[in-house]
Image (cartoon, rainbow, N blue to C red; front, side, top):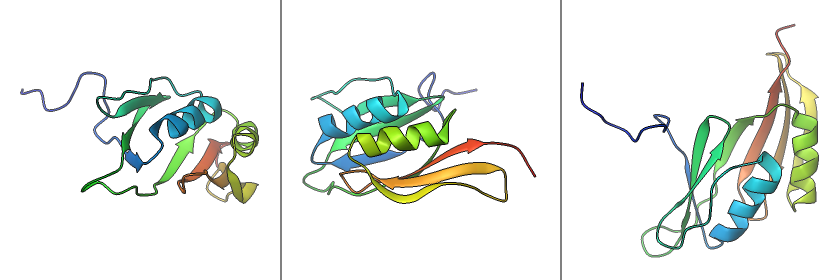
Length: 123
């Protein structure tokens, strides 16, 4: 079988283009406990749980583009509070959804929307 992706990477890795890579990387670290580093020579590869989000400079053909991402975390309420403290604006406070998630939504200072969820179980 041929190797078609990098070792340890998921099949799908979202990528955010921004004019402020360092700022987005700092936000991901403070809000989601992301692991990774700012890189000047390529995209920052930020690991959140078992997922990777790439953060790259916009410019040229790659205009800054806002993302919409759904992130599972151990405590949606606490992560929502950290996001607000880090400069995000509230779109939706944490509420229990009929499909078992407790979910909140924020928009970060770069225009990315983050739905923050903790699975609480069905019913």
